[in-house]
Amino acid sequence: MLVQVKSLSQRFACRVVGLHRSTYRRLPAAATPADPDAALRTWLRVHALGNPGHGFRRAWAGLRFDEGACVNIKKVHRLWREEGLQVRAHHPRKRAGVSSVPPIEADAPKVVWALDFQFDSTTDGRAVKIASMIDEHTRESLLHVVERSITAEKLVAELEKVFTATGGPPRVLRMDNGPEMISTALQQFCADRVGICYIPPGTPWNNGYVESFNRRLRTECLNRNHWTSLLEARVVIGDFKSDHNLRHRHSALGYRTPAEYAAACTHTHHPVDCGTN
Image (cartoon, rainbow, N blue to C red; front, side, top):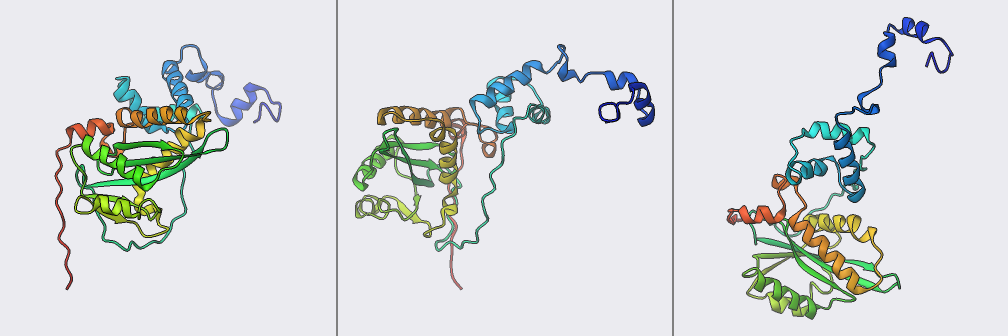
């Protein structure tokens, strides 16, 4: 400030603040051609450009597990901030909701599968409806349905395919109170096969796992693409869900992918007995 604003000489300004002139003139390592972190900074910029919804933790997970680089997460955080790659954290408004059903904990695979719908549109303005379902324990994406409209009969047929492919149904399906979810067709299909857990109306936070997946699908896929046809939407969304299972590393899973975690998981379900006094 003394040099630039007050137009004082470097010698006098350094004497005033007690700073050596060589220290004042020394360039930071990041501003020199010999920057030892130049390659790492370049990798982080490329990663952030291709994955604008990722933070420094997921970038570190990619370096550590995909690239095999032995780098400290605190160093990645520092370089991430210096390069201006921070992603604004979304802090939703806190709500005070009380569930009307007993809590169901997914303490093992195939205990609770969460189901939900999303909507998008093609460039001609026609609707695109997307059905997603995840295992709340392994975070695996299990259902890929992209249609103009999804009826209860279509949903039942797709669920039957998933149950057959995975060796049977889960213990519980968690879902909201949409018309397809409360339909007679789905009720009859699930009768004596799988339990249905409806969240209270207007409380999407009670279905948080699939809502989190839907938010990631929205920000990292739907908002970044314009569909010219339904076929294009099916292919790109299908690639995203496959990439989620095989490449997306969850901190809650020890920075393993859902497929890796599911393959190594040995947890079994332990039901909790509830009673009244």
